[in-house]
Image (tube, rainbow, N blue to C red; front, side, top):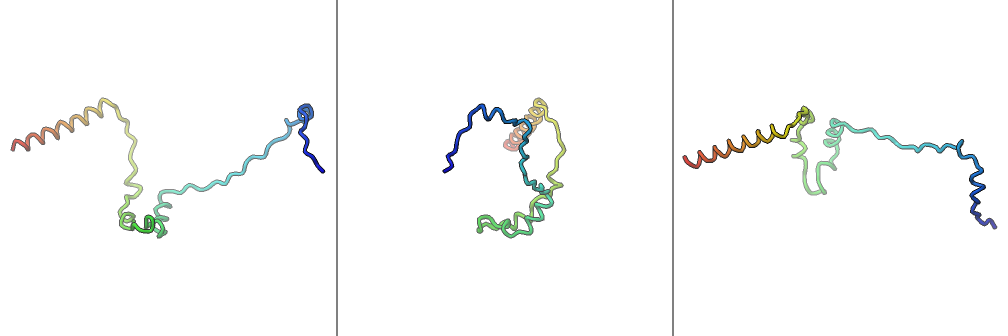
Length: 103
């Protein structure tokens, strides 16, 4: 009985849409876990101690480095300084290799 009708453009323009405001989306905010929380969870759940149910990761999880050992200070690198340092180390290693062959 009810047949949908496409409204005319004039009818739509007559409506005042400026005062209508869309509702903001609702987003669930999840807490970001810290390294400490992740480490604690890793040791508590047996599911994380095996890989594909076959590979035992218990030994690996026992020797993982703590967060404090992974923190590094930011250091700026300059290309010319880095190149000189690496080339110097390579020349030193090459010289040591040459002297060992001669002995």
